[in-house]
Amino acid sequence: MKVKEMTTKFLVIIEKSNNNHSAYSPDVLSYAATWKTVEKTLASIKEASVVKII
Image 1 (cartoon, rainbow, N blue to C red):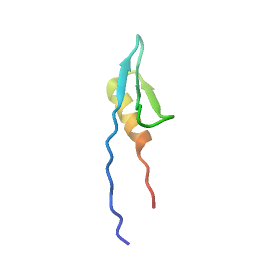
Image 2: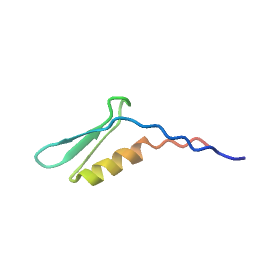
Image 3: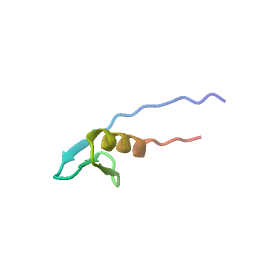
């Protein structure tokens, strides 16, 4: 069985506070990430958004 990979783009907003960065998507509810660096925050939000259906 061949599985087709699908890609969807979502807007992600990254905000900086005094000690960390947080990211969320207004298009996807109940999904956010917080880390010390922008890179880690973005990687975490990308990982949280991956859904695999087998």
